[in-house]
Image (cartoon, rainbow, N blue to C red; front, top):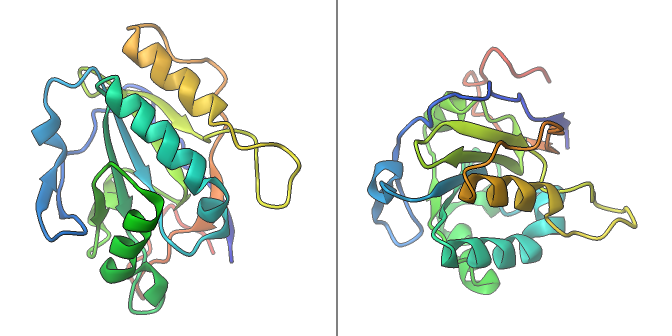
Length: 193
């Protein structure tokens, strides 16, 4: 496990669109959520201890904000050949077991992860209604093995601000997690092992 932090994509960046398959084999695009009051794009996977640590609270948080109109998608960009726990079949099982209500997409080419400059799992991006980045960073201060409870505090503040058309929090801490498992020869220039 290589512990990595977010790249902190510049605030104001327009959300790169994508079309990726979900766990049911359907193609999902960010543009199909046009008109949402806010967008949450997150890079997660099945096997990372950092994701495992937050995934139950993450499922609840996403359900809550989807009910408020937020478009939510999760993307797994890990090399499933080398990490079979992150295969589309296992993604489908994880989604069902956790009750994820959002599309869980597979970025086999890893090009979408690169477009977002995603570096770790989990990695969170909140965009406002015009699909401009207003937050990138951690879900909260909790980490595997810590006594800090998983609350989603930072991500909740950012989503609440986006829904209220208010400025995102000035303090934005990078997310921390396992590095994205890049395919051989496919690691971006911003990745350092």
